[in-house]
Amino acid sequence: MGSGTGPAAGAGSGRGVAASVTASALFAVIFLIAGSLPGWGSGEIFGWRVVLTLATLALVLPFVAWGRAEIRSMLLRVRRRPVLLLPGACAAAIVGVQLWLFMWAPLNGMALSVAFGYFLLPLTMVVSGRLFFRDRLSLLRKFAVAAAAVGVLHQSLSGGLAWPTLVVCLGYPVYFVLRRKAGFDHLGAFAAELVVLLPVGVLAIAGGPHGLHGVSGLPGRSAWASGLVAVWAIGVLGGVAMVLYLLASKWLPLSLFGLLGYVEPVLLVGVSVLLGAALGWSALLTYGPILAALLFLALDGRSSTP
Image (cartoon, rainbow, N blue to C red; front, side, top):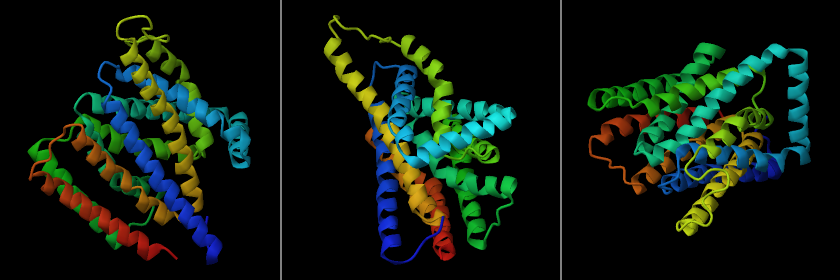
């Protein structure tokens, strides 16, 4: 994957930027919708997201050449090395927890904690790259890690790091390391993970407040119907966002793709405030160093772009 030159490369970059920003916006919309559904269990919302995201991907992957190629490659690798099913199952479990947490947090007053986890994620990914793949840490990346450490230290001393923050910023690096080590770093593998999670998702729906068939015929039917539309929107938008995210990764230079990934946590903090989270002045001592760290990473990405 190269940056390319000329009008074609510029068009590709333009499409990639649009796809990445749109994906980040859709993830923020999902976060907002999930936080606006009182009376719906986070488990059943998670279940519908698994079912409908998988259905959305099933309408895309088999009908595009790169999607079919990813599926064939994955099946061939598993056939040759069945042991790869183990890291695949572990990755499915981790992403299942992450998908559930993304639905649970905004319903339970922990939206800001999850958003903070996504702020820290680029930094923990840098550290993971150094530990597991011997990625070289440039001077700017070292500054970024140091600045982030200041923000984390302040948060730890002032209010502690909430467990959702740790699940996001520590769980996702393990997930990505497992996928890359197994050679399953693509959307086809994500679809396979959703297949593994499908029974869990169906059970979560069946065991939720509304069940598989809802509460039709009861006085709250109208509220249930509007809520069901919102839940279905979460599932479909999740699938669309993942497709756009992958397309952006294909169309953009890696450094630019990484920089645009910082749009999502900013939007998530905004959604958290809309859902009622309060940011005091002391938050500047937490988010200020984190934003400085992201700025260092942005400068590092620009300097490494050919």
